[in-house]
Amino acid sequence: MSHDHGNGVSDPEVRTRALESLLYEKGLLSPAAVDALIGVFERDLGPLNGARVVARAWVDPEYKGRLLENATAAIAELGFGGLEAQHLVAVENTPEVHNVVVCTLCSCYPWPVLGLPPRWYKDPAYRSRIVIEPRQVLSEFGLELDEDVEVCVWDSSAEIRYLVLPERPVGTEAMSEDELAQLVTRDSMIGVTNVSAAVAA
Amino acid sequence: MHGFGPITCEENEPVFHAEWEKRAFANTNLSLAQGKLGSLDSYRHAIERMGNLNYLSTSYYEHWFAAAEMRLIENDVITEKELRTRIEAVRTDPTSFALPPAEGPDELSELVAGMVKFGGVSLRQIDAEPRLAVGESVVTTRRSPKGYTRLPRYARGSRGRIVRHHGAHVFPDTSAHDLGECPEHLYTVRFEASELWGETAEGRSTVNLDLWESYLAPVGEEDA
Image (cartoon, rainbow over all chains, first blue to last red):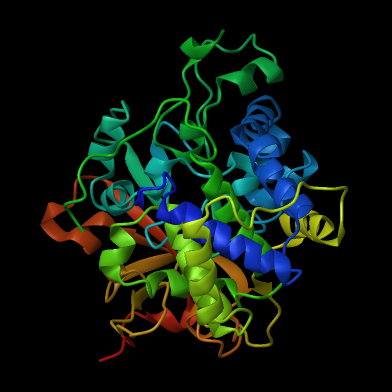
C-alpha cells in the first residue's frame, strides 16, 4: 500500500526510516548489521537450497530415509538450517498422497531451504482457501489431481516447518543430481505444483 | 473464511519489493534478536492487535513495522512521543535521519549471523510425560480466548487423530502475554476435511495442524 503525502515518500517509507534512526541512535542497529541481514535473505537463502535437498533425496535413498525421519538433521548435512527451520519436517508426495503447506495464522515458512515466502503465500486468499478447497486452489496453479489422490494440507500452526518432497518426474533417470536440482521449483516444495521434467534447460 | 478472491502470483518475484521492506525486515529482526520486542509470540500477537480491518487493508511488512513500533513502546525501548516526533521530522524532510554508510563488521552484524544460525528454537525439555499418543483420537477445545492462541478457529471443537509427537515446545498462549514459556507437548493432529467442513468438503483431503496438549482432550473427555 502506498500512502503518498505529496512529497513522493510513502507512509511506510517514513515510518520505517523513523524507527530505523531511533534504533540506530540507541545502539540497537548498525548499517553493517542491516546490510548483513538483508544480504543473507537476498543472496544466501532461497529455493535453490531446498532444490539441492530434494535432488539429493531423489538420487540417494538412504538420504531420503534420513530426510523423512529427521529433516532438520538431514538438511544440516548439506549445510542448511537455522532460523525458521529449527524443527523441520519433510513430507513426501506419492502417487496416492499430495502434500501442500500453508500458515493460516500468519505466514510461517522454512526460510533456510526456501528463502522468504512469495506474496501469494502471505495473502489472505491463499491462506483462507487452501484449507477448505485445496483441489480448486491447486487446479488454479495448474495441478489437476485424480479424485483418488488424497490431498494432505499442512497448516504450520507451531514452530514446526514443512518442506514438500515432490515426486521425481519420469524420464529423468539419466540426469545427475545437479541437473535434477535445476528442475525443482519453489512452488513444488510448497506443494502447489509438481516437478516437471520439461523445465530442463 | 471465503471472499478473499483469486490468488495472484507474480512472475520472477523479487525477495523484497521496495527498499523500505528490507529496512522493516531488518529493524524487526534486529530488535527481536536483542530481545527488545519480547518473545516471538508476543510480537505475533502485536500483529493481531493491529485490529482486523487494519490488518487486512495493509501489506505484510506494514504489519511488521506496526507490531515492532507497538512492542518497542510497550517495552520502554522508545516512547510514543519520540516516535511521533521522529515520524513528523522524516515526513517533513525525507532525506533526514538516513543511516551512515556501513563500515566493517561489528558486534551487531555478528549477532545477525548467530540469529540466522541459532535463532528460533522452541523445543524445551520438560518432566511431564506426554498425555496423548500417536494414533489416539482427540477433540480440540472450543475455548475462544480474547488473547493469543494458535488453535485456528476453523478447527475448534473438532475430532482428529494424532499423527506425530514433537516433544515439548514453548506455549504461545502464555508466551505472547509475557506470562512465561510454560512448554507443553506438541502434536500434529490430522483432521478429515469432512470433519472440518461437513458436506462442503471437496473430496479426499485432510488438514494437519500442530497443536499443544492443552488444546486437546481424548475423545470422550472433551470439555463441556
